[in-house]
Length: 59
Image (cartoon, rainbow, N blue to C red):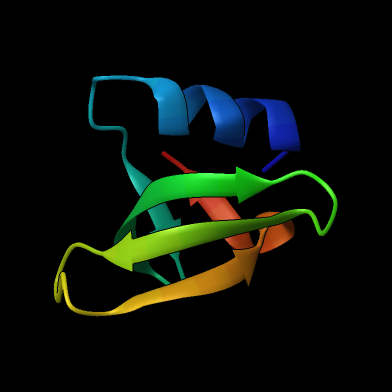
């Protein structure tokens, strides 16, 4: 996923279908400098982590 699209999704009030390693996630914040996103697992909201934007996919 490109950085601009990830930022748009993070700012959107609508839930988008985004996956990381086949699991749905929610993008909380995008770090422009490191090209990463801070995400939360929808399966386990306690699980939050940073991932490379290139590993995120939108359906």
